[in-house]
Image (cartoon, rainbow, N blue to C red):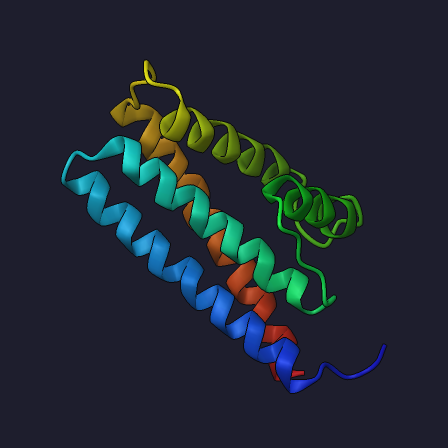
Length: 136
C-alpha cells in the first residue's frame, strides 16, 4: 500500500479534531438539558470521524448516506471496525434526522445518553485508528 500523503493526513487530523469538538459540545448540551441539539452534535461527531477515516482513501461525498455507506462497505464489512458500530451509526443518523426535521420529535434524556455513549465509543475507536495511520 502506498504511503499516505500529507494532504490525506491533514484532512484526517482536521476531521477527527472536528469530531472531538462536536462530541465535547454534545456533552455540554446534554448537561444543560438540550437533548435535541446534543443528539445533533453527537451525530456530527460520528459523521466527521467517519470522514477522517475516509480521508485516507481520498473519499468524500456530498451526501451523508454516501459517507456512511462507504465507511460500512470498506471498514465494517472488512472487519476493520466492530460490526456493532454500524448499528450505532445508523441509530445516530436516524435520531439526528428526527431531531432536526420532525416537528413532533422529543428527544429523551435516556435516548440522548445512549447516543452520547455511542458517539464516545465511535470517536475513541476511530481516533485510535487515525492516530495509528498518521504515525505510520
